[in-house]
Amino acid sequence: MAKDKGTKGASKKSKKEPRNWAKTIIPLFLVFIMLGTAVAYVWGSNWGSKTDGGKGSSTKNAFGSVSDALRLIPADAGYARYIDLRNDTLLSNATNSYSWLKGSLPPSSIFKADPKIDLFAIYPSGYFSDYNGQFVSLTDFGTAYNKSWPDSTGSDYYHELLSYYNIAAKKVNDNYYYTPSTYPVVSGMLENMAPTAYVMSSGNTSLSAYGDYSDLFTELKYKQIPIEGMTLEMVGLSSNLSYSDRYYAAIGPVDPSNQSQDRLYSYVVIMHVNNTTLLDSERGNLALLQGMMEKSGFESYNTQVYGDYIVIEAKGTMALCLEDMYYRWGFIKYQAAL
Image (cartoon, rainbow, N blue to C red; front, side, top):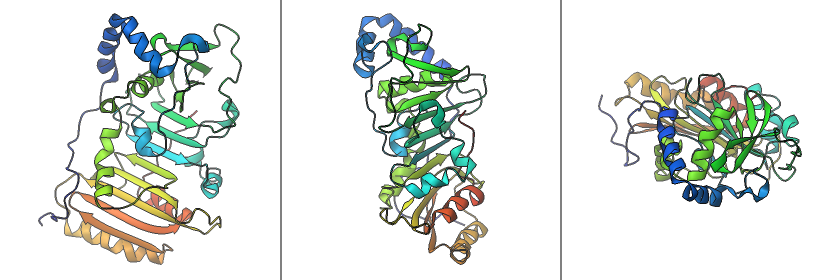
């Protein structure tokens, strides 16, 4: 069966081999070291100077959506979850009910503050190092977070991440460090944080994970499907739909002023199809979802196929949306942050 013509949108992206971070960055490091003072000047302008005791500056990066956050982390993230808990009390409470949300958030006990905005990204095995824990977190802890806590008095209290970054990392244990004075705060294994700091400071989005998923955002924008105000967003390469090779999924309250437990959430999904033609049976299964999901409690659940993309626009309670994301589609991945 021929593929739908659909409407013009983002072009299909070919798969690529995961980036070998060491082979990519080490030659660049050598060049930067040879540049000497010029490099120090550039890095200093991005991350602050040693007048702050070598802890790094509080330079702010845009961090208002998963689209912003993907620009701050290295390419080839297999999964990234962005959550904004500032004004979504219902979602904030849900993080205590769903282990696959709470477990991926940085522990409040370490930072003496609760995460307000958080990105959690998982990378392929061996991407940063040969160790377990191929993840990195970027977090906004809000105004309660004191970046000077705990006070650094001993020379070994902080580990200099890389001297020409002017950024230091606080050690929690051998497998977990964080940067007290950057925005957002970076946490994870030390080997994972250095490449992330490089991408954040360079401003070079071609090195970032944004390009891996940019066609999804372009397609949604072209279709005029709004995703502003989403409080939980995620992108990934694998889901329960075997013939999709990347996706974006998000929910956000339809009326943020409504604080009732059963308030409606907008639920948007776009999946890229990795083969050129959907079988009639596959199209039929997608078409059947609308009636089935509306019978299960969704107010609406519309599926459309546009060329190489499957789009879902739905409205339902937060619980229904989360369960659909996790159980039906496998969009939400879990790996403990610590």
